Image (cartoon, rainbow, N blue to C red):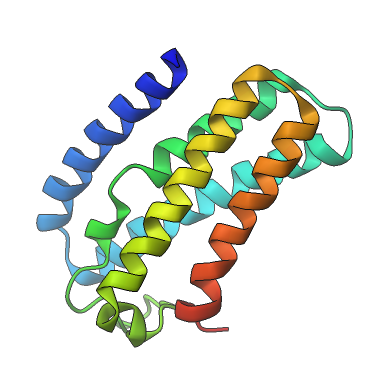
Length: 153
């Protein structure tokens, strides 16, 4: 419970900062920042996967899960501003224009992703490998649900 409160507080602070910061970012900078966030989450998912496939370190998994939850709850939606639906010079994006046309669906996918990230952080804090495995799978499915609809190959 305490970890959930900390994660929520971190997410709220990050959201406030992201919302404020994105107002000052050019579209190409928004693309770069959101890609950095997704790359950081991917790197931490790789750490969890390695732990699930090898020697399981509850401490490493919990830290990686908390990092993912922090980014997931950071308000990254603010980095999908006007003009970020297409490549800008050398800054490329794989987001499909449909993402910007289906706000309700995208919002639900984002909520599902945040819920899955929060759940992974909660079970990781308890250190049960089988519970982490299941929650990690749920998080992967939440990622894939959005990628399948709104991410170009």
